[in-house]
Image 1 (spheres, one colour):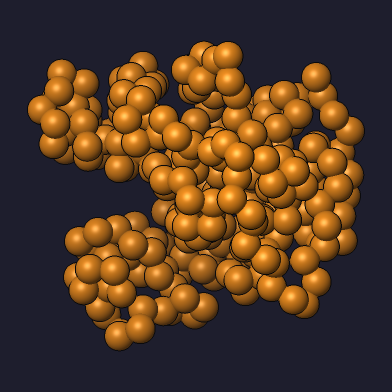
Image 2 (tube, rainbow, N blue to C red; image 1 turned 30 degrees about the vertical axis):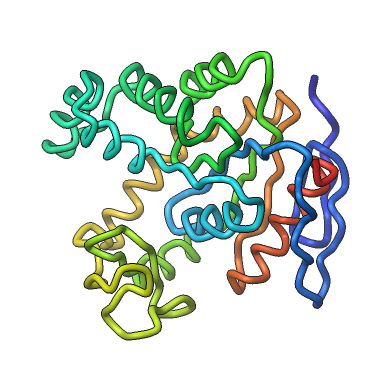
Length: 252
């Protein structure tokens, strides 16, 4: 069923009700949930999706699961699916939908059985339909779509730095590592991605939009979508996201 959307001055648009404005005071941590949260985070590259997903996982006490985590786990396990995925990963090709779905399903059966924050999956409507089948008769609680302009994405990605060891994300403008060039998580080297040029970024954004615009519409029709303004300080964005989630779930 499609719910009516409500535009909110707090920077949140939701198909699930009205989210309270977080105001100038940091949003309080949600109370312990009576059941685990099942959440998908959508957002173009540079929207802060990875940063917010990690924060939400800590906030709600459920694992942050990225497709990269799932792929690496499958490869390490030596499973048949992992061996197939490794071929695509080593050549830099996109892992096909059917293989991605199989790997994510295996991973969710373990790490995600008591709730999850999904980051990087689903990427298209076909994957979203597969996820719905995996969870049935349960369903997702909410899908957060982090909205940010192309100009802001270009600014952020120009300053993006990534840990070469664990993949943690930083930004020299608004989220630098505590020690320049060193990861706060593992101590590994923090460097700029070779493909973070303006031309490459614009191309990736075009690909994302073509695949994800139908996905956003699909989740809106399902009554699960909450679009959040992802501009500004990361702490303020987190407040907006938490407000949207709590409005959608009633804090579970």
